[in-house]
Image 1 (spheres, helix red, strand yellow):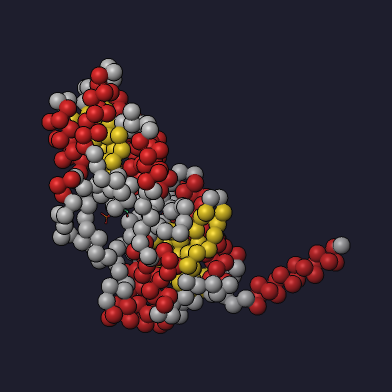
Image 2: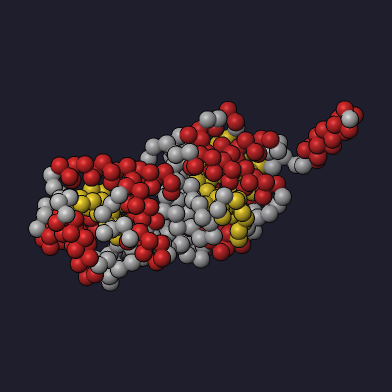
Length: 361
Ligand code: F6P
């Protein structure tokens, strides 16, 4: 028996030696999120197990364009899984914003002699990875965004931590709203999707939740508030996603866009608070949670799942399985086409909103 075990160990050792040591690049792009460092730690640990080296591009795709990167070894990333933010920085740089930039990205990648790139990001970062893959760069994606709106996955790094922050904030705002018999409108992130508002609002006990996917019915919000005050509970907390547009604002285009063409959203809470105060007669205040939703340490699931996805991404690289994104379907890690991911964003389904509406009354 002992002899057989030795044989297997020897075979494993030879296989590992035969497998070339790869130079794997990793980057974090777009808005930061809690759990990015856990994904990086998973990548580095699995890479070193396979005899490979990992290099982190500084500040996302900008690092590739400026050829700025640093080697990531176990001793550098050890225990960073529980730290918020990203140890290699991020940006909203778009490496395929025009042909010249795209060619520079490809040229730099080849000159730096990397064997693969693991891009950790949302639909913008992963969309760029898909385009560079089509141009010949061996790329693998990991889904990250507090917005939770990446297609083809039921999990994105940072979402659950953002939901916990929003739920806690709504609960806290409820006690002060109650003391002053006020309405407090809370604006949460999510850009053009309402996942954070829906789950954070539900978990925090918001009295009403407005999301961009559903046209806001202000009269119904007023009705719910008046009925609540009428029951003697003279306060209300309203959760509104930053991408919600008031009925008269549908067509208004904001001209501030980022390198991926995204308009800056936000400002709805202040407007909605004024409307609700006028229509209910009760005092109303507004709070914009902003970057609090992207700060601090990740909750448990945003530590463990990113590590798992990081390990899986390195295995795809080892197997030469490029143009793919590692994802979660239920509790299972799956592999999906990167190209499909950049086809758009995943909206909150109507039936899920209708489920949440049950709890507004
Ligand atoms: O995509 C994540 C996100 O936090 C959005 O919810 C938000 O609208 C956007 O990033 C803010 O972008 P920035 O960090 O560039 O201000």
